[in-house]
Image (cartoon, rainbow, N blue to C red; front, side, top):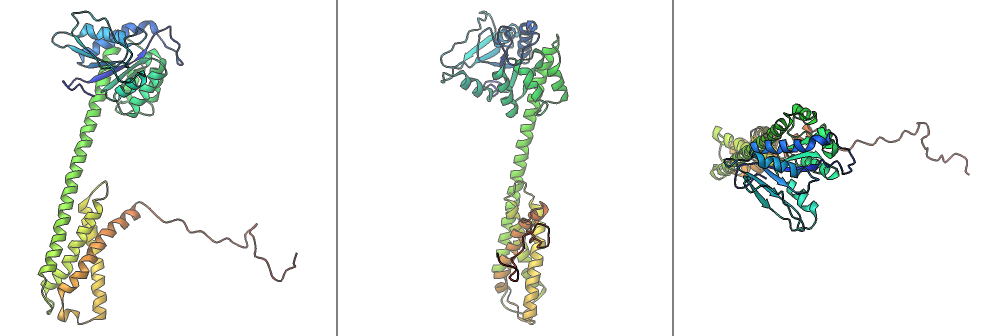
Length: 373
């Protein structure tokens, strides 16, 4: 994660270019690797990055990267190297006394290097891979799976070269130009371009995180507005129930209350139903609920008028609202669910066709008139 005392990104340095080690995927251009590591370290210092390292053994790239990093750090722009060794190990890069680099030894309580190594990767703002073997490749796969900004220097082969191949399927925040850059042969400008590529990925990741957070806040506000509207609708329908007139000749206001209160309740039911969805669109749900409530309430009144033709001559609005408000609410609440199932194409299991007794090979029931065996 970003250093707590500043906005400087923490970059994990992983890999090995030791020509004396045996790797499943062989190294390439190993003679250029030490200077390439120092160039990468200098560019990381100029980009105001902090380093996360795991060993000071010469067989790993951390030694040369930290050396180049210390060369480029100045009094005005000091650097920071955080080492994460296991409990039984020590780290010493033998930096000169006048180096403007602050070393931090953050020893892990576990005695196994894998615990400190893989746990630290998840807390970094980016990962730099070069050469290496299986551990380097696994580190790259973890970075890809966790969408961490990643630069895999494929020019030197090894596990990092295999991780570069995986970019074809999992790109995360890297684009085509970034992937081509990681696969290019090493040159004098490669270090600056690769570190710039790493920081571009980080910027895209931070921008995507900010956009997702903004989207979540917007959705939360939209949900709160929808639930507020639903609560107001329910209160309005209850207010209509409380203030409804006693039995009398039906007037325009009575009919408006009799139809309007269930419709308001149906909108509330649809909004409440929609609040359970991940993508809440309460305005659209309210319109659907109004449609469902209108049809349900009118059908109910039509059935009542067919049974009692003189219903409107002595209309008891309050008594009818005790039934029509729950009816409207239920219509709005369930209609949205049914509509979503229809839109998604959900259907029951296909009907099983009965077997054709005349089809070839079909078994036939025994004939009582036939011969007995």
